[in-house]
Amino acid sequence: MADGFFGGKIVTGDLSRYVAERCFRRFSETATSGGGYWDGPIDHALLRAMDEGRLVAPPKLAEQREAALAAREEKSQRDRASREDLFAQLRAWYEERTGNGADELDEGGLLTWATEQPEMKEDRAERHPTPVYSEEFQQLLAHVDAELGVSDPNPRAVRNGMVAHLVKAWGWSRDGFSHHDWDKPPEVVDDAIGQRHGSSASHGSRSAVCQFREKYVWAAVDRIAGALADRMPVWNRDEARWERLTNLDGLGHGLPDPLPHTEHGDGGDEDLQDAWTPDGVLVDQFEDVDDLGQRAERWLTEGVHPDPTIFLAGEVERWPDAVVLGFSHWRRGHQSCIDQLVQVRAFGVRPGDLDLLRRDAPFVLLEHYDRAAWIEEGVYAAPALTCWAPWFTWRGTDQGYVSYTGDGDPQPIEVRAAMASVTARFEGDWPQEPDVWMLGPDLGRAFGVAGMRGGRWLRHYLDGRGEPVATERDVKPPYYTFDHHYLVTDRKRLVDALAAEGFIPMWIIRVLWEATPALFMRGYEFDPRPGLVHQSRDTVWMVIGDPVSGDTEVVLLADALEPWHRRADDNEDTEEDEE
Image 1: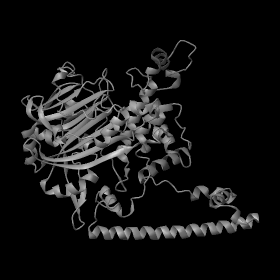
Image 2 (image 1 turned 90 degrees about the vertical axis):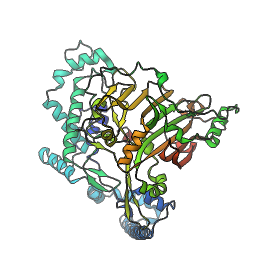
Image 3 (image 1 turned 45 degrees about the vertical axis):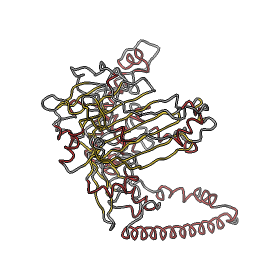
Image 4 (image 1 turned 30 degrees about the vertical axis):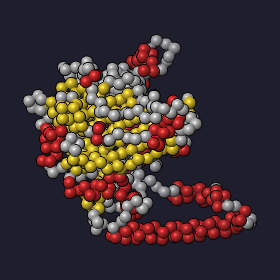
């Protein structure tokens, strides 16, 4: 039990390492430090920027910082003094027991010697820090201890035991389902499935035909995840406190889309020539450079980006005057030797917050090019329902943060997500689990969204009269070479809907240039061509205002080159990462 093997005959392999973890890991985390004077409402990214000298702290925050640093230094001095006292005592103890001079051992050797002493071995468990679980999780471990008489049960063993208990309670047994006698014709159902379908009949491939043991484990994981989410908090590392989960994404095994394919088809018969691509999405540069490594390096270090506003508006789908709510475009550029990824997200911000946004955006909005609202009810969702159904609970509608005024007082900044994203499940197409984009919940209500028409590759979101108010297109890609996905709506409708709530449009745009892998990969090893010094260039902008009227402000948030030495350890995998 202490080693985590309870229930192991049922929860084996990846079912233990990966599937079962999805019901338990968040709840068995331990508390960590809150980070000194960072405790408080102001966004930690802004406080870190003050520490690094990239932002000037107002007097009030500067005083808090100095007090925190002084307290930290005082604690460090106490720790150093305590360490010196400890080693002085160990040296005296060593001389007393061995008759040798303590100087013959360094500190590491002295500690090793001390831990091998009998009394140290006996007391080691008491001196070892006890994990700081939540009170509710400690009660669960105490219950296991009392019921089974197992001292200090391993959380993974408790997890596997809970899963195995449910699986057995629902009727699965080894004798009834699986003999694993591969030299004889199968007599029970799991053996027959394994022999008939081979390795494809497993949770790893998410096959429609899998062994019953795996299906029972999946169901148990979902059941346990829901039960724990109702009863236990998780540790919020940013705010250093226990809190109940509000987003269940990533818990449990998840279920496929419960709705059948729409009567309007999967959208696969749409003419791909109708898909919109902004002009200048990947312009030609440095074609006169014959050396491919040097050409890629010139792209990264000297390449000129197009005006980022080209990604925001145009004549798209049914709207001659359309704006982009979400856009993702990836293209492998063999001739240019550069692969390019463009990502865009739309938001609404309040005009009175613009001064703080301009100051803070390089620190708090750098990853908003990939942000959207999400539902908290589960892993997979039906787009035809989630685009309008009132019983779904949305999270992430406000992607804002807590800033600070010139006086150092906290100031909440609202960043309203214009786009929402859900994960759907489609059999027979790749990817099978795409992100589906739709209007954010507030915007959807303002637009009167009442349904959806379309399918896997093209969706129109409809109002109560059946008229499209937004369109999502996810172009079916040539594998590994191209990706093109966008959500658009009418510009005036968006501007008016935001203005009615006191917002103006704002976009975060990212353009990532990366040297084509053929220039730096040899098998699974990095082997950059001569002349290729950098791997990528990552540029992020914030655009505020109306891109069609021309009344916009473009703010460069980041423009960073990534050198090769940062990728030195990428191939090192750990057991913890796999779990």
